[in-house]
Length: 217
Image 1 (tube, rainbow, N blue to C red):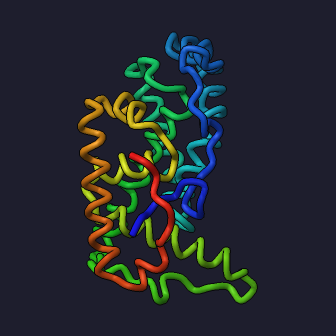
Image 2: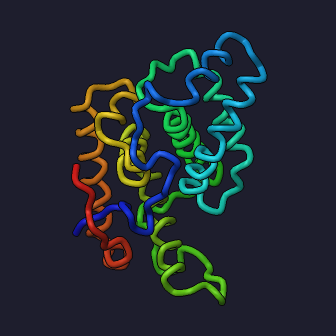
Image 3: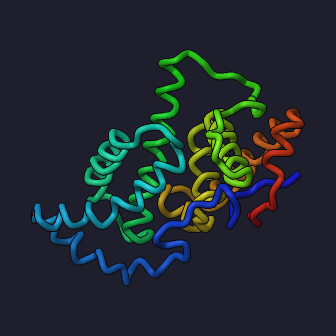
């Protein structure tokens, strides 16, 4: 059994599916002005990164309202501007912050509801609109099942796996934006895959739903 999202129903295209050289990021001059206190530049920077962050939030949160999560992500991005060291381009830097925000939001929602079923239910994970094509409905069910599986992982593993599988970050880039050695990233991705694979293997319906080609480590 293998699992991935690359170019499949769980894959989310971003503005930077192929990582450009962060030293050539056109937003760097805007960043420098924003760091110096130029509020107009800060507003422009937020406008530039917001679409990428919003797509990431929608992928991680599904149909959940993303307005609060977007605001929280952008505030965290502003707070993290001084810590930016050119490890990746700014849109992907902001996307990583959005992913962390989304994971935290899902955990908060779960804690408030007091509900988390160790068995991911795939028979009726969503109510299908009557006009939804079967292929689209299957993709929606796959995305929600994958999000639920991520919820069960420790946050560092969930973040690393989401960045690697859903958003196609390289292992080196995950290490750079996370501030950890690349071997730590490899370990997190491996442990996350092993944990998810065990859950999937234990659930025949989930195994059938998520049977897709695996991304190379």
